[in-house]
Image (cartoon, rainbow, N blue to C red; front, side):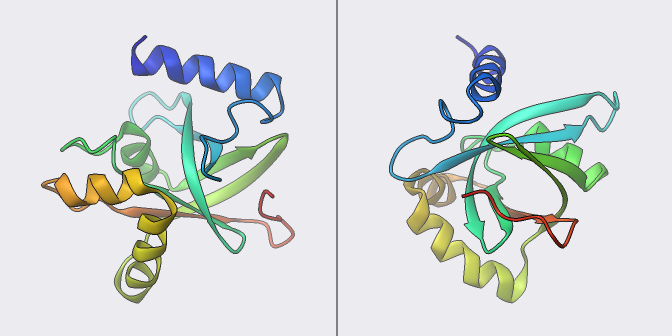
Length: 145
C-alpha cells in the first residue's frame, strides 16, 4: 500500500472512530489530522501526523519520513499558514509557524526524546528539518487530551 492510499485509509478510520482507532502510534505518540489548502489547487488536503503537545499548541516534524524534500503539507502551510487540526471529534483552527532560535532550541530536544523516529531523521537528513508549530487561533481552544 502506498503512502497516499494508507493516508486516506488512516484518515477514514480515524474519523469513523473519533480518533479512538489510529489516534496514536504507540509509546504515547498521538496523531492529529491536519486539514490544509493545497498551495496550487486550493483543495482541502488532509494528512495524519504524529504530534507533540506544547501547552495548547501542536508541534509536528517537517521530515517527510527523512526525505531530502519537504512534505507537501509543509509547502501548503508555508503558502497559507491557516489550517485546521482534527483531534478525535474536535476541530481547531490553527496558524502555523516554524520554530526558530530559542523556541527551536527548547523544543528540538523535547521532540527528539518524544519520537525516536524524528531524532533518526534529524541525524541522517542532509537538510534542516523544521519543527512546525500549530497554534490555536481561538483563545478558548483547548489542546486535545
